[in-house]
Image 1 (cartoon, rainbow, N blue to C red):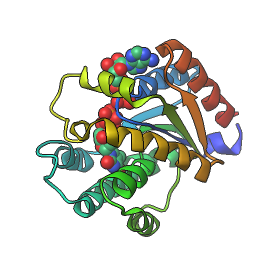
Image 2: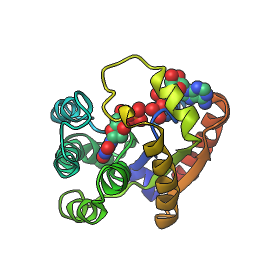
Image 3: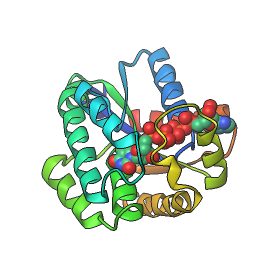
Length: 211
Ligand code: ADP
Ligand code: TYD
């Protein structure tokens, strides 16, 4: 067993709404479990009982319910709880943690689109989180397709999707810039293909990281 596996592997998915992250997280978890790996599949905001409660506060209700700064504090509080109670214990036990969104989403949504708070995002991250994934898979695709896929879903968590296409375009460019900024851990995956084709690339990248 190599060092990375014995210490666990922290793998995150990022991308605009509707890009296929949740679909690919589940498929990757199934594929790695079929190889006999111990996998924890989790998500943000959420992933621990307290963070799931905060999820309701940030994702439901009026789009103007919180300022960008307040929202950043709520997302960071949720992330800290998730890290302490779910992610760190699983990694310490040598598991693979697959997380649907993590701090890169705060860098994008609170740092770039909702508010111009990237400096605050980075400061809070350094102070309260101080952990980056081993591997981040960015599912990249054109926002029109992503938004129509996201709108096709039923549900009450529409607060962010209500921001519309312009935000998603800014997000796509922002995520690609972030992939350059953190080139050592980011891999960009073309999401505008069949579920199976995307899943094949995702598994190959994960296996590279585990090898
Ligand atoms: P995200 O978690 O990034 O918002 P989802 O995985 O929930 O995205 O996918 C959004 C919607 O698009 C879902 O209805 C899902 O079934 C569908 N979907 C996911 N991947 C693909 C794909 N490669 N091609 C077509 N539809 C897809
Ligand atoms: P998610 O449930 O992953 O939505 P989707 O499946 O549509 O991609 O995340 C909900 C929203 O929360 C999403 O629009 C991005 C936003 N978000 C932030 O603004 N900051 C964050 O730190 C995180 C983790 C998510």
